[in-house]
Amino acid sequence: MGEINEEIMVDKVSPPPVKRRRLIISLLMILIIILAGVLGYLIYENQQLYKVYLESQQDKAELERIKNNLESELRNIYDQYDSLKTENDTINKLLAAEQQKIDQLLKINADNRYKIHLYEKELETIREVLKSYVIQIDSLNQANIVLRSENVEVRKQLKKVQKESESLAKEKDALTEKVEIASVLSAKNITITGLNDKGKEREKLKGIAKLRVCFTLRENAILTPGNKIVYIRIARPDEVILTSGLNFFEYEGEQIVYTASREVDYQNKDIDMCIFWTNDGQLIAGTYQVNIFTDANNIGSTSFSLK
Image 1 (cartoon, rainbow, N blue to C red):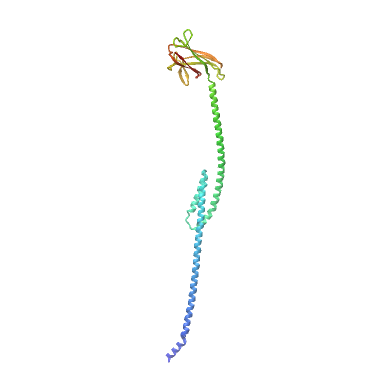
Image 2 (spheres, rainbow, N blue to C red):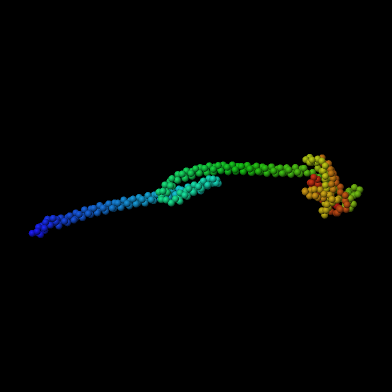
């Protein structure tokens, strides 16, 4: 009796099979819906993460591009400093110092964001410094152009002055030479005659006791008047100088032998004079050379022959 009642009670509590299946299906549907929601959420979150990843990569690429552009601009400015170097050592040192700053910036090992921050911070200052140097150097170049132009003109003037000076010096030398030539006494109408013991002229070697050398000292207003010693120097055909004793005078810094001499009072007018030399057996046949000297100058010459 008791067992029958328990079975009746279990049957009353347990759902019928159809209801149980419906319940299971409902639970499964709910579970599927929950799983579908979770899956959808996960897919959505994954899409969002991927989107964030793409945006991050784009940001990274953009930062790299910006950094590269800034680096390129810094290197370009570095090269511009090279092109600005001049002959001015002070400016060259300043330009080199700015290039060193750029080198230090480019060598900083940091992420792109920090580098971009540094580059952007320093670039404006570097650009302004570059502009100031460009202006200074341009001013110096303009000044140098003016100076070079002035130097060219000065050199032209200097060459002109030098040419004029050289011309004047040549003219002066020419005038000095003319004056020197003009201030030298000269002899004209030089004649050499052989004389015998009685003073008669002889043309042949035999019988000549003396040689008479006559000439005219030319008029010269430039010379200082006064007594002058005139020397004659007669060279034989064998170039031996005719002389009577040890007779020397100075000519061109040397002491040379002369044949005979005479003192004359010269007053800037033509003056005729003769100098005699006594033959002591030195004469030989041939052509003789005669030179006349005074004031250490050769003032005339001629030649004659004896047979």
